[in-house]
Length: 398
Image 1: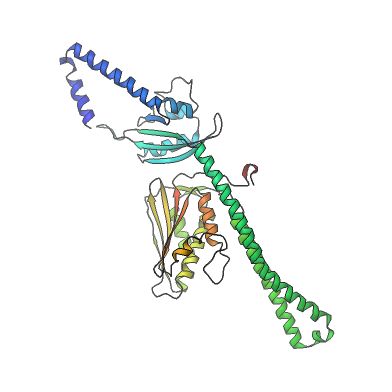
Image 2 (image 1 turned 120 degrees about the vertical axis):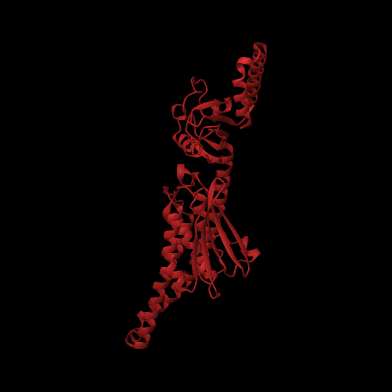
């Protein structure tokens, strides 16, 4: 505001200022402008300055190169929709620059002249007197190399996870297979024995053996289904919607089961979160897994409580599921996301691995805080703008 006041005072007294002083002042401004342009054009990051109308006020050489605009004329003075070809970028700038909401390192994929990822940060500017908005400074950083390194790391992690899952699957299948073999042999011997088929006690024993075989086959099917859910790359079907509304639906769905087990379920929702892109089915599955884990953790405790919370954060939003259950010892926290690792008597140990995969495919991160006998908080952190994650079976990988 001080700069605007200085300019106003200077212009109001312009007619009274000596011509030589004006020439000196203008010469100083021209030299200062040239100096600043040299600095901005030496930067590795792209810089674009926008007016409140989304008209381009300034663009440096790095931004021209990143956006494949080198050689283009008539950029300054035009609106972004007339210059930038990438629709995702123009939508991002329109939504956040006009909304005066700062954004940090949201990644956008550019397709020209070759696929490239750019991290976009938006810094709103203060409005001049009498104006509702003040435009924005946009910083563009080439994120292709960092993203390629991240994808290499993800591939290595997924390969390691696949090996762990395969070993765990073999172990999980071995027990029911042994049981199936024993009871199938009992059936074989009994069916060969004419006398055993005529006795009621033997018929009951045969029926019991056949029931066990059916149960073990169902258990095998469940183990295989869980395995496939954990390892099969599934591209999220993103929809733009209100995440709070979706969390409320999950809460309504689970409330009868939670309350029937003597546990109180509460929701704390941050209504400042804008509409975001997510896969409703995958987020539902992740929340159901977390709530069921919390239900097991609070079993038998007085004043058992589970809370689902949403919260707006820097360039993203959080969903957390917390409980006042038995908690997780520190030595187990390091292993809790490992496939087939479980602290429960029953279960495959794939629940959190599935949640972790869903969060990863939404471009987010999972964090666990826990204290024995006090409870656990599992937080899912998502970006406001979803960053697609390339899965192993896409584009011929894996």
